[in-house]
Image: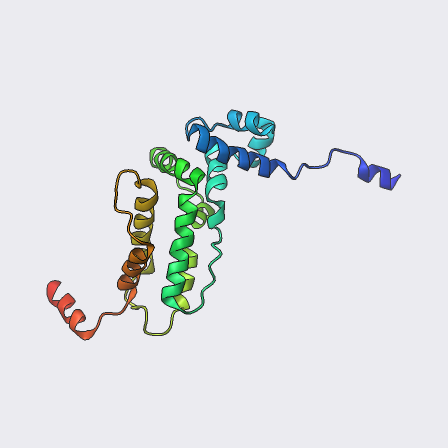
Length: 206
């Protein structure tokens, strides 16, 4: 009797998440951000809309997870070699933003959050920004290779701007420079100033 009761009830369909997320990515690429609605995802995936809503409160959360889930965490473990780690990080970050679905969704997501004015949940900031992974790379760097006066968030903001320019504005700006140029830019911002540069910096701020 006990065994028969355990077998009663409908088992949870563990493929629902994958089907819905996959359909979301396909719709973003084929039809665009505005057309990727919960109803469209339901029809494309064969998953009932109510099952999608139980997992994602709105299409925005669904699109964010479908397009940026790969950023949390990035598969870049610090090795202590700052140039190598920054290069691997930048390459992985660019690949995540440059995926077709992410590129199709990024502008719409940015516009939505700017218009809504509502704070985003902390886990979404971590997923999209990957700031914690960047800080781990800096902490693993050899002593003296990173200026302690430099704010890692300031450097990361500059890096994020470079990534967004290369991915979102690739059709507008024709400045597709080699990846190594971006890596060099980041390292220059991180490295400690020598005595001459420090003196010049002090004079310019007077």
